[in-house]
Amino acid sequence: MKKISAKITSIGHFVPQKVLSNFDLEKMVETSNEWILSRTGVRERRIIENGSTSDLAVPAVLECLKLRNISADEIDVIIVATVTPDMLFPPTATIIQEKIGAKNSWGFDLEAACSGFIFALTTGASLIESGRYKKVLVVGADKMSSIVDYTDRNTCILFGDAASCVLLEPTENNDEGILDSILRTDGSGKEFLHMKAGGSLNPATTETVNQKMHYLFQDGKSVFKVAVKGMADISYEMMQKYNLTSDDISWLVPHQANLRIIDACAERINLPKEKVMINIDKYGNTTAATIPLCLYEWWKDKKLLNGQKIILTSFGAGYTWGSVLVKWTMENFK
Ligand code: UT7
Image (tube, rainbow, N blue to C red; front, side, top):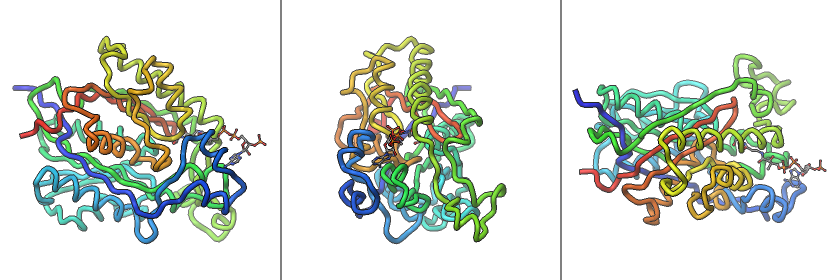
């Protein structure tokens, strides 16, 4: 029997209209455009005013289906990577399923923080490779504004809201699509990046709310160091595994957490900056949405082309991190 691989056959995105600029933030906390720009690379981010994570995801999914010219009832599985589900349960995947009318599908949420998209992509690819499923939607969506404390200058400058998704389908050409993934977790990182309350450890009480335990907490300096090493090492491991040099890689698609992290990672693997997808200036860190949002924009601008080999890489809370090697062939789909 022929080995089945998974390939990306369609893509969609959604960013809300409202822009929250560094200058807006100057009026909210003690910060400056110069500080934010030089330390993070972010100029502005988008914020959804009315709506939830599923409201971000649905337009992205609809765009993806339209591009592939299929209806929602053709979808087999919906996987939603998010740290900001509409509710703790039911899964946001089911809320999206109902909103788009994907009546023949099942699905689930996958929580792997900023690595959510590449973990979900790997999971979705495995479902395709198993031969059981033909159309798997992988969504990265986060309404980070719902867990950000806009009086905390350490974190509120970093994050934004967005959603993006890809459709995975089978191919018998094993030299295209999702070629391989290397994924890791290290739970010793939990103290540096987390949300303390709202889960079973610290259920919501008046006290947890008063102590601001339902907001994202980050020890930025500690995360910074491991993020650079984590993303660079695991991208390099992928290159070594397939004997690839920087000439063989057309694009590095890094999680957009901090421009300095991205630059340092690219430098460590000897990849010129022209080969790195960067849009953190426009959207900030949108957690599970950063990587597919980059893919969407570069594809739309005809810079991400068929036949190109690309490495997706991310690092996030947990810690979670990884790299995915992809050969992009989307437009060839028949
Ligand atoms: O996506 C998941 C993974 N997350 C990451 O990868 C994020 C990793 N970390 C980072 O991106 C960076 O550590 C930050 C951007 C969060 C912070 O940058 P930093 O260069 O590590 O700054 P810092 O936290 O060490 O703070 C330096 C100084 C401090 O002042 P003192 O103690 O030196 O007087 C902060 O209080 O900058 C101060 N500061 C600010 N000043 C103006 C912190 N935030 C701000 C701010 N505006 N918004």
